[in-house]
Image (cartoon, rainbow, N blue to C red; front, side, top):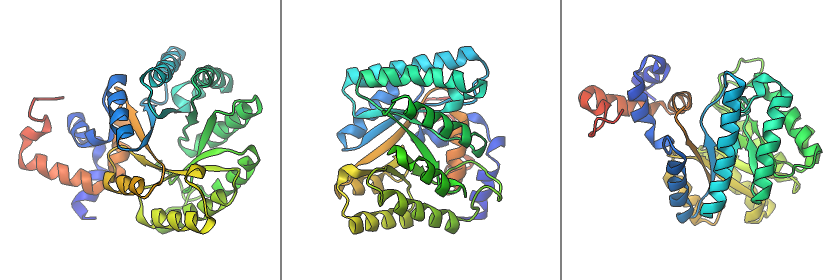
Length: 311
């Protein structure tokens, strides 16, 4: 990774929003639910499952959480009506976690009831480490109430995650295991690429070795992908005991290769008008891509808005 790419990634907050949108288009289905449905249909046709995610977090008032909750209900109805192989992922701060556990749990129960009506599933996303305890507490509470159609996310970069996995293991959880993308301090998180990968592989072995745990292996990194495939073969797992999970627009050739090998693959499909924060995180994660497109725009500024003046 060159100095220019790193500089672009570190300076994204100063980049005009239209440029960020242009660079990040490959990561987002679009502004509307119809855009997400169209993308889900394309992915289903290519052999992939889908998780739909409504972009938007840190809602500022109760009314916004209610609007988001209603949109999730619409998503679940639409998935059923369109016959999609898709579930949904919910950001806790988007449906009221900031306003207290009961607000958040109330909205989650409403969404889970709709999902159960359709025989579907809801993943509770994990945000920064300040919310980890609250999100895991809510997950345990919902499972204790009998909601078995929900899962959670664990992040290998957090040093606490092995203990969190052990704590929820008795629930027979469905876990999306990812690295984590939030900036975390050294006293809470591994800081180096090598340490985060090592932690991921250790958690992967612990999770896959327990047949009561269902793991979504969320990664695009070759060392983890190869390690996961080797472990799956070593443990003799059948394809219904795990799945690989990837982000829309990231390494589609690797995604297609996993499908061709017979693995179940799920693609995370974000959509919505609140695309900016998600896009910046994705681009910081992929500085080479950000630098490449920025070079194009510097060469020809007209590319900032695309051929049709799209903003």
